Length: 253
Image 1: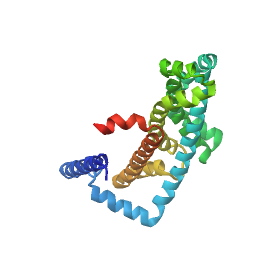
Image 2: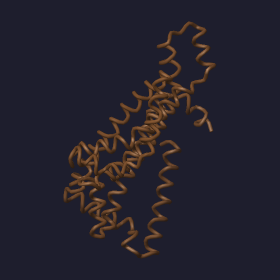
Image 3: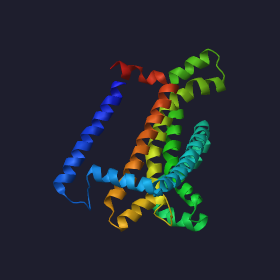
Image 4: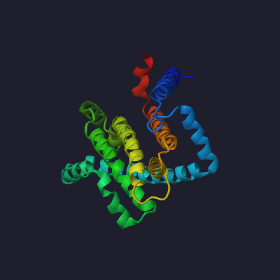
């Protein structure tokens, strides 16, 4: 097993020890409960089937919103980077919408699209799309000019230059945008399910808080956190496969 995995597991182990010690020291179950109690509540919710139903709803919403954000964000980023006129025309809109507090738009999406998947996916999409778009544009417009001049001097066409130089150079930026978007999309799941939802992990958090079920609340939070870690690690794996040269110096250290 790679050393990095062992270090990550060690980090989680230290965090678990600190959590358990703090929970027992504070002895305030309305705020922080021991990990054992959270695990017991997780098993209870899993046996009842409620947790699987809520998790599946949130998973569908997350995949729909984040997947759509990735497609639109990368596509729009490519279009904006290809033309300065397009970039200058849409830049004010991107800046304005990116700064808009999406939580304020939740009720509007619910009124327009109902309380089903549509309104949740739309809100998650709006939350996640702009980091991908902005990073894609940044990556494609900051390619090393020396590399571009070298490939052009060897007679490379515009398409060859784009796919052999600009896209590989922009890949780290795009992956970074996707990693930021994952976290924002998971937050978007919770926010979206606070408005008129009937199921989902965000709805479970809200329902648990209403009845002071702190252990149940932390179960949902931990599931979302684990999904975030898994998604980021998957994106790291994709980057290593598509741009292995970026990790050579790091692995040598």
